[in-house]
Length: 205
Image 1 (cartoon, one colour):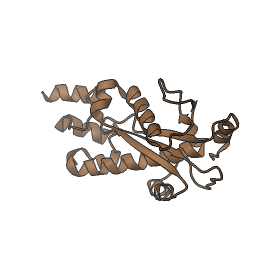
Image 2: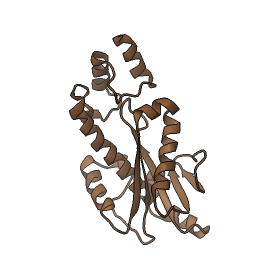
Image 3: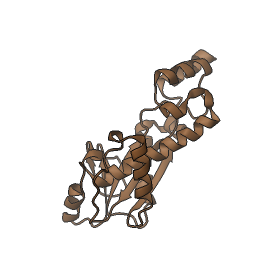
Image 4: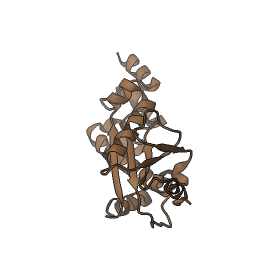
């Protein structure tokens, strides 16, 4: 289970305020990439908070409400839309979301603990932590916020574009989604730079 060991190690290096950062939605064919940054109090403990991928949707929703309504926790979230992903590519869009979410925290933290590898041109000192969402509580909290907010948005999009079934797969490239893409072609929230979307668009011309 994640804890605050990595956050404490950074504090022992002289960084007072540590933000954990994670993303959700790098792989889907549609919708934004969602990024969150979280600063937890030094005394924070939690028995069930974990990497969002290890939890049920119901548990994620409960944890989201708990985290975002806790006045001792500071957090910020950002969505980077499909249009921007197409302009700068998914890796750059994810990094941009990480920069923006970090800078949205006021006052700005001293250092970031980021799930995965270091981020180019990050605006402060930071550390990459592979599988950080299962090691660090602040990254795990960020993973919950990023995932729940993106899932909720995709459910909203499902009402606007009902033919794609976004409420079921959240934009990921499932067989159901790809079949709908073949039948209807892309909609405005599809990532045109992703090969299956581009190929479906060509076939619909």
